Length: 200
Image 1 (cartoon, rainbow, N blue to C red):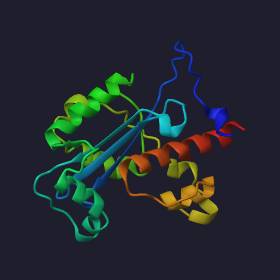
Image 2 (image 1 turned 180 degrees about the vertical axis):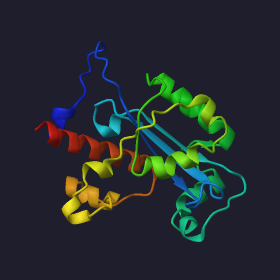
Image 3 (image 1 turned 60 degrees about the vertical axis):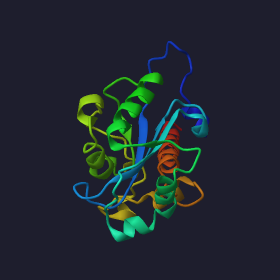
């Protein structure tokens, strides 16, 4: 089924890839809380695990946030604290330039289309607080939110489904990982599945 939605890999094809972005934070308020992890996946049509992927942990130095959010991220915080090997750790001042470099190296031109669950209402509000973001990163105003693709008004009313519900409706097994790269990959899978069903 998903093969219906595979991008044409012909270099002359001008179909534009979108970028699925997910963050993990120390709370819900972008004014007082911080980003601690960023993941981005460029949907190039290849198997999701092979799509170009950006990942880093954000070392803010002093951590501040809300107790519940901090409690669900012990692994992330421990890695940042101990500099566990095998991962990239960046200060907030360096994150944007590294992300821009990643996008440029993988052929993403500005402005690009971002994708993510509640990206406009949550992730984007935090990302805009990063140093240099508005200077170097340009996204289109409209974003791809998989919740709208899985909305069933007769069941959901006016409330959009959460990621877990979208996964069930798409037949994707597992739970929401609450890790940036895996959650960004789930968004790509949800978008691909929904669009493939539309084409059929």
